Length: 112
Length: 114
Image (tube, rainbow over all chains, first blue to last red; front, side, top):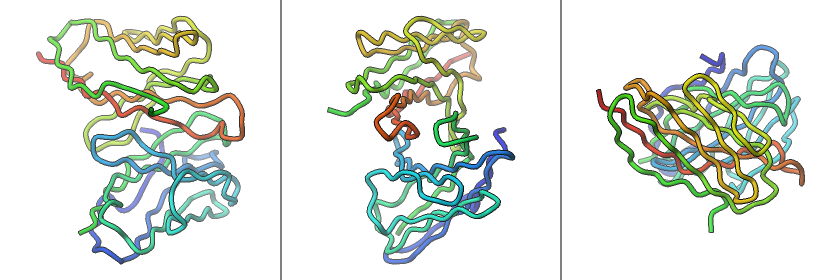
């Protein structure tokens, strides 16, 4: 176990709704990265937060947004959900932005 | 062309077989290479981390990097049913402002049959 936790485990939403996913990083880690993994695909980088600031962003629209809190836990928010947003959402924590990333178990989001 | 190509399989082998998993990449900026194992409905777990060309061994696992050919491999010796999982290769560039972003292959689904 990596010590990275995510909640909820599963979530079902309908198109147009908004969702918030949560991640608690491993003790001592100040960086959280979020990835989207569609079925049968490798994870795709969404963005990274380092010391409460967005440190980099992948090719995802602005309706994907995030936060990092002073305790380095993080949230991923997705607005105006689309069917294609159905995926496993993974967060990974690391000691710093370029250090080894350790993944949590993921949140499986289904959009109907 | 995708930056990282990985044959998704599926790959099915008998227990005790040697397994070879491979990825190719097109971006010469990739300098750090990782292999993750992902069990069904779980997050990826880091198996191996390499930087230089050559071999790195850890127990039954050997990671091989050939930067001149842009080709990486993971070998599993004496494969066990517990090795049944999806294996993902991942890479990070050395610089260029994105040396924090993991780029993954699609993953290869491996089944080891008892």
